[in-house]
Structure formats: structure tokens, C-alpha cells
Image (cartoon, rainbow, N blue to C red; front, side):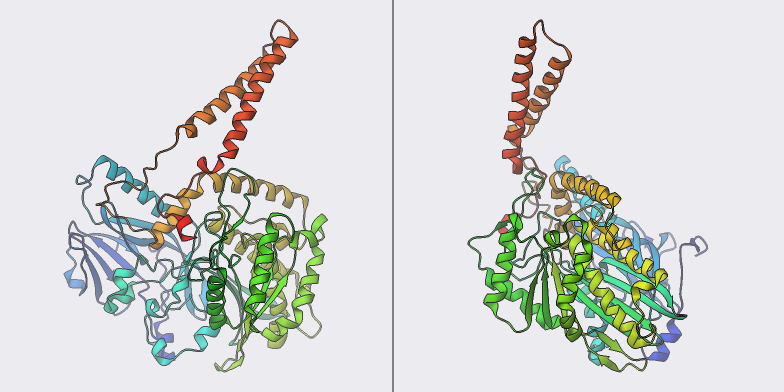
Length: 609
């Protein structure tokens, strides 16, 4: 062990604390990976641990053994967790966490962000593959590495990050004895598919880490000389996961696109308070396929049974969270209007006393940078927010109050407008919590605490950026308001830049991103015996011909302008001819826009929708 990088390996020994509290340490904190030509060995290096996970690289069998079985000749490297295994064209691959960053401590539990990974092939050679198979395997590996490169994978070896404080407070002794993998909320376990082989063998569960995708930040704060921990967690669902324009609405099981559960936690003098909100796509069957237009028209499915999916969605939401207060922030005119009307109609038809619908046209109300008008919405839902309350447990573990329901906010993407509103609702809840805990004095306003306000606003803006990058491919819009409390000209310029980047990615790289997510989550399984490569999709001749014609025609138009003919009429004729040719070709390309965008190849989303 003398060759280990001790600066990289941070061991925090809290075993005695857990034992005194009667808690179980579910995962190994520190591991060594040993490789031989025949096997992978993963050695647990916690105090007193003698377990070694052995993976046969030929038979793929997984067994549990002891340290003395590790060959001295094995190549050794420290790792920090097993993400899982995946089957590609060349065979199985083992994915392990090789670097991590400490985010903070959560009630004496250390929370980590996974920052680097290794993808290790079981096979020692690729000679058994054809050239086409080699290329497909390379592309599939690129997809896996792309997902792993997206920031936001978090884990803990001793704490269940997938559940809210309130859900964890209402559990049985049997639940407490389960491994982290068994007890995790499967909606938020992004490596659930990768761990399917390990999950089938309970004896190796301590090697299997459930990993969350989303955002976590932790801050030690002080107000009035009183110190407390403030934590923000966003859990991104792996059900109906994907990218902005290729995954909208709901599926037949009622899972909403871009569903994120966000929990704000306060820890002060042993008391813990929590406020939970959710966001998710408008829960009807609709799509918005990219087609080279800046804003494609949303299409509502005219034949689907919307009520069935809608009811499935809210039945599950009510069971998990209680009352639902829907805040729909989409425009109430233009292309977004039919979706707002469909949502309102579905809520009215369901006629559930557990669901309340609030429509607030964000862009109309806040036009001309009148963002102070957001107070209209806050005032409208203030009484409801007080009724829903928040979760609070005292230092001895007694539940003081429960949160009776959640705000379910949405806009079109459930990113920019949604995050602004969520941050304002969370601040209002935090104001009440800190007053009740005695941190804030009576009459004091959270907005007046400059040092904390800076932390709070930046954390929510960082949360917006993380969620936006994971779904839309760029940072969030409107974060200048979240960070500073006002809209700025520089913020508008940055929003314009991010919008341009989104346009490019949504049209020319999101097919690959969607395929990557589908492969990673197990929505698509690689079959090396498949005769036809799913990645080889023939392109129509117009895909190559029309852009070339447009570029040539535009170039000739410029040349004719720069190199004038003998007469102005001759020059004008040439310019008009090539100008009309380039403009005409451009509109033909735009009309056939769906043929020119980067579309997913692995899972036919049209069939799912």
C-alpha cells in the first residue's frame, strides 16, 4: 500500500460513532482494485474488513472471497466505488470510480462527488470483432464516457441520499437493516441498471454503491452568531430521462420527463428541517422534436389516452408526497397555450381534492424586466404553503411537523422559470424554519442577511446550471436574477449566448446524447449477434447535396457582388440568381428540418410516445 496517493485518499473514520448509535455502515469507504489477466479483484480496505469481490473476466461470475486470495502479481490501484457493469459489443465492462471530491458532511456522514471513472474491459483482446463491430463498440464506449463526463454524480458509503428526511423518518426496523442498494429509491439510482448483477447477490451489496445524479451543495452558515448547516439536494429521476427536445411529457407508466426532486435542509443544534419541491414536464403525451427551427412547435398526441397517464402520474405523486400544488409557468398564448389548456383541463377532469392548479404566465407578468411581479404568485400561494408546512424533527428524533404536500412546478423545459420560482418558495419556507428554530429574531427578514443571501442565491443558481446542463446541454437562463435578485443587461446577453449554444446542441448533438443516456440506463441493450448495426442509419442524398448547394450558391452570390460584371444589370442578374438559389435551398432544408438534425438511433422515441 506504499504506492497509494495519500493526498487523494481521504479516510474519515467514523465507525465508532455509528456503532455507538446502533447504526450499520452499509458500504465500504475505501477499496483497492487488483487486475490479473483472468480476474478483477476489489479489496475492501476499511478497518477490520477482509472481504474481496472477485469478478471472473471469462465466465463473468461474481464471488466473495478474502484478501489472501489476491495474487501478488496483480496490478493494483485505489478506487472509491463500483458503479457497475455493462455489456457492449466486445463483451462486459466494469465501471469504477477513480476520483472523488468531498462535498461535505451530512449528520456525520461524508458526501462525495464522483469526478473520474475507469471503464475496464473483461476481454484482453478485440481480435474477435469485425471492423464494423469494432467501430460500434468504440461508439458505445464513447456514449458511456459521455454520460460519465456530465457533472453531477454523488454518493455516500454510509447515508441514503435517495430519500428525503421525511421518508427516512417513517421507516421500519427492517428498512434500516437493508443495504443502501436495497433501500434506495429506485427513481434516483442512476446506476441501477449497471448494478443489476451485483444486486442479485445480497452478500456483495456492500460493494454496490447507489449513485445519485443531480446537484448537492452544503454550507455552514451563521446568522445572529448562531451556526447552522444549510443543504440543497436535487435528485434527477432516471425514469423517462433524456435530453430537452427528445424527451417531453409522460410515458405510459406516468413518469414525467426531467423530473427532479429538490430538498432544502437546515440542521441547527440537533434539530433538522426539510422542505421538498418537485418539477417535471407537463404530464400529458406531447412532443417537441427538433427541426432546425429555433423553437419547434409542441405537438399534443391526438390519439393517446391522456387521462390514463395523467392519473398514473398524480396517483404516484400523491402517494409519495401528499397534496400536489401545481404551478404552471408556461405562456398562456402562442405555441405554449394548448399545453396550458390541456393541463388545466386534465386537472379539472380528474377532480381530485389532493390537487390544486395555479397558472402563472411568467413571461407576461415579468415582461420589461418587472421581476418584482413574482410576488403576485408568492402571495397567491402563501396560505397554501403555510398549510403544506415543512418537515421538522427535534434533537431527540421526535417529529414536530410533517410536510403535507409539495409544490410541483413546471415551465416548458422545467429549468429556468421553474428554478426561479422554486428558489423563492424555498426562501419563504426557510424564513419560517429559521424563525421557529430561533436563528432569526422575530421581525427579521432573511433577505436582510447579506452574507447568507449571497450563499443562498449562488447555490440556487448553481442548482439551476447543473439541472440545465444535464437536460438542455448548457447552463440555465435567468440565473442573474437568482444570483443578484434583479434582472441585468449582462444577464440578457448571457441568456442569448446560452440560447444559441442550446440551439446548436439540440439540433446537432442531442441524438448522440439521448442514445448515451438510453444505453447507460438500460433502455437499450447491446446485442453483439445483431446482424445489422443500429448505429448505421443511411442518410438520404439530400442530406449531403442541399447544404453543399446552399453554400456554393451563397458563395457565388458574394463573389458576384465583389467581382462586378461589365454592366450593373449583368451583376444584378447574377446576384439575384445565386441569391434566390441559396435562399431557396435554405428554405428547402428548413422545410425538411427533421432530416438534418442529429436524431437518436437506439430507441425509437416516437413509438414510446
